[in-house]
Length: 158
Figure 1 (cartoon, rainbow, N blue to C red):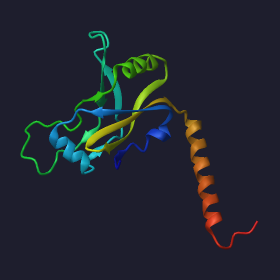
Figure 2 (figure 1 turned 90 degrees about the horizontal axis):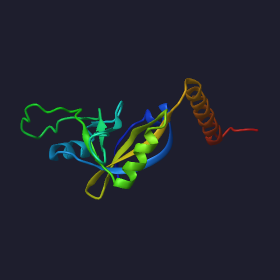
Figure 3 (figure 1 turned 180 degrees about the horizontal axis):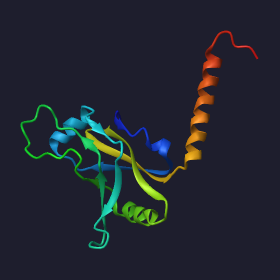
Figure 4 (figure 1 turned 135 degrees about the vertical axis):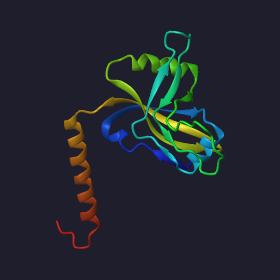
C-alpha cells in the first residue's frame, strides 16, 4: 500500500475527527500520472453536489492538481484541477451529509495511495484549528524533537 501523495497541511490546519477511505474516478492517463507522483493535494477539499436534485448526493474531490502524463498524446483542453468523483457507500454518504451540516466541520483529503491496482483516497471529517492551537502544536513538536536529540546524544547527563 504505497502512499502516492500526502496533504501535509491537513494535520496542521485541522483537527482530524474521523477518517474514511474511498475510490476515485480517474481517466487512464490520470491514473498513470498519479502513480508517477504527479499529484498535489494542497488546497483540495471534498464537497457534495446535487444535494437538492437527487435522492443521494454525489461526492467530489475539488482542486486536486493532477499534472498531464508526459507520455500521452496531446489531450487538447485538459484541466488538471477538474472535479473528480469519489466512490463511497450510500450509508457512509448519508452519514457524512448529516455530519457536514454541523457548523465548523469539513471534509479534507489526507492522502492518496494504491490498494492492489486501485487508487484510493483517504479523507477526514475535520474541524479547523485556531491560531493558538497551531502554536501549541509547534511547541509540542519542538519539545519532542529536543527530547529525541538529547536521548540520542552520547553525552547525555541528568
